Image 1 (cartoon, rainbow, N blue to C red):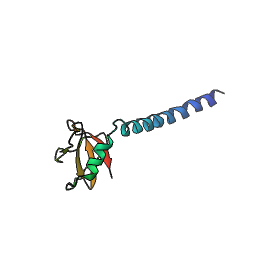
Image 2: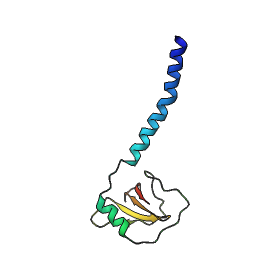
Image 3: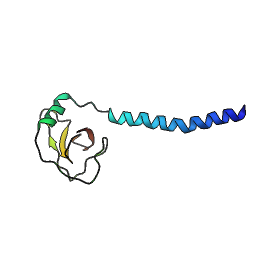
Image 4: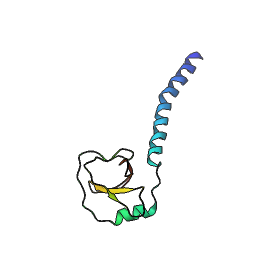
Length: 101
């Protein structure tokens, strides 16, 4: 009986960190709801794409070498086109909040 309980505890210890990581990953993607007007504006605007070697990741800042553009009537967001993908960022921190393929 003690061996069975020890096995159960070991299994839980192995599974729980993976479950917590999965929940944390989902939380990153949904932390900021971007208004539809912002998404539409970014999709409509035609600006040149900038090529960078770094990966663009939601939650991480966009490199300073990338010029971001303002979005009229929405000072909480800026955008850029990087590696042919449209990127919406928080202007103050340059943190990526949405990637539009």
